[in-house]
Image (cartoon, rainbow, N blue to C red; front, side):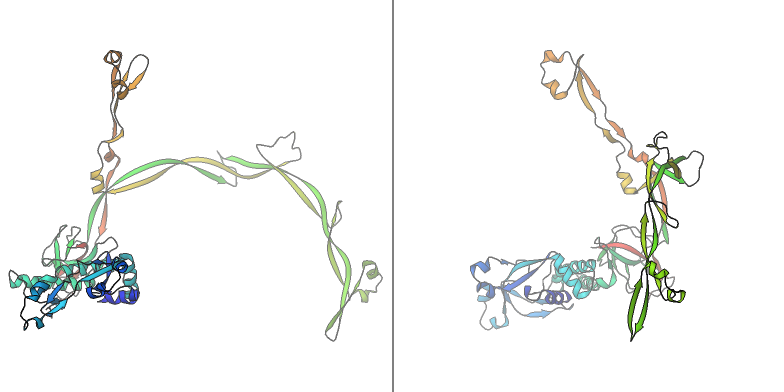
Length: 457
């Protein structure tokens, strides 16, 4: 009842779990007595759940089957119950009809179950499919079910036990398939569709019955196989730009022309001089201008620090830096008669080469076999012509017999291409996951086990 616990935990009162799970929905169920007490509007939200295996009848007693499931012994309709004698009726109890509403989408169930169990979506889907198979085979465990032989009965019990153990025996995959370990204890090779049952080696499968999974790929228990596929090579051309800092044969010079003028000159000049004297941790500043500073003694000047400011000048001053304005033109725009004061600046050298780009398109054998050997590139058609015009079939059909005399029929054959001719066969080595085991499952060399893809029966 892990799923029930998960849903009860996640959905609280959104539904009442009654033991029924489906691949697409989980239903909210109420008994007939509760349904009868609903208003007309409330009843419109419910439908009779005819697939719940809960009957509008009376059951003799509730019993526990040998495999742990619960079932009813003898069921009778209401009419049959009323015909029983009064001393027999107390042995029966009513089983009520159930009504259902509010389907919960499978995605919400998976999310809830995943949060509760930390299981992946493929495992959740596997458990739900497994639960459905268990439910479908409940009838074979009822004590008074008529089995052809005791062996047949035991086979069903074994089958159901394997279903219960399935989540611990297989690894479900996102595409709905399963990965299983299968041994060669019964056969040396397996073909697609072979049925697998559990091996006497715990945790492994082997070919046999009762089967719960079928294999999806051939298996010969080899370490690897050589697989054939087909490849199509497509060659396209593209231009590649090559660059060099130095001149090279066949390379083109990339350059521009530049000129500059001095806008102004800039430099730092002394604005004034300053010193600081500290009294009781308080700094007292005093400033003097340049002229005052020049009248101080050398000892007094040593107490002052010059304060610099930036200055500009339209004319050149010693120690000032010129500020330039540049004008650049491309080689295409350069005119020696106009740009007389310009200097050429070479940035790099370059050339363009054409190279082949090779791409591969690989397809499997099955896809290759399904390719049309005569793929129609252009469909064929018929037209009619005379000395002055061409017309199609519909236009020709609209002409009178006398008008058709002037026309000649022309048939254009379809243009086809053999797609398979564009592919060449290739091979690759595909490694297999192989284990060597003894009868107890310990690694040895008695049996081989391969990890293969399978599906539920």
